[in-house]
Image (spheres, rainbow, N blue to C red):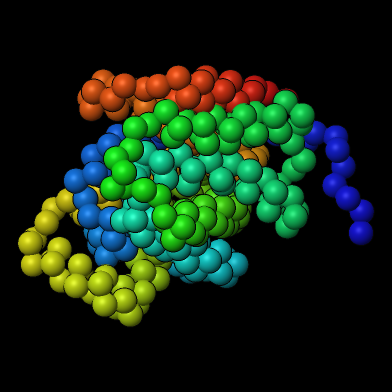
Length: 312
């Protein structure tokens, strides 16, 4: 078996419009996480958020012209796999946040897929070999994201436990899975005749419903999640609905960018722009005071983003 060529793929680049969409998505993602502190860190909460979001965005399927009869059979396997990976990501994120401080866990959950996606993609022959510049950018993004939490002042009561780190790894694995799978699914829709916008928007709705379907039996099997689900439904809380709208709008832009781009690794790396945006929002709206480690990590992360966005 021959090893992948070390020559960079000339298509390893991202169009300007896709860059813009990822920038807008990063702002929305950071804003959603800022507002998400009002929500409950549970799989039941995210289950309802994805279900409500999928149902509210359902008219997009009519607009896009998506048809079951015209959808290739291969698409359904990718959709099922994506829904499962998204469910694992949501569960890992919720259970990690319930056991540790978000300011420490969020950068780690965002950084790990930056390296995991190109590695797994190369192993499965789904990704082209990155250039030296882009590979360096991936590593700097991860290094910067890992350094940033060191500047946070965390109360002793909110230590990060080993289970929390385990759930962060689960979330990172889920992100890696759905990032690679979603690109394949969107490409299948594109081959069937849909534009990048139509394919991304359609898959956004279908993925939300698939992930909600995967999460429901998991919630039903866990007593704490069942109780949380009943509590949220009794309160007639609109926050899961609002969260679902924001989550889907955010990832819908990412899916369109994926359909327009040649490489998933770049898309995943550039999504980490949400980390410095989140830091900025924390300074402006939460009055946080970033320390030297956080500013150093921010500078390193931004340097990595510039390298990844730079054309081959």
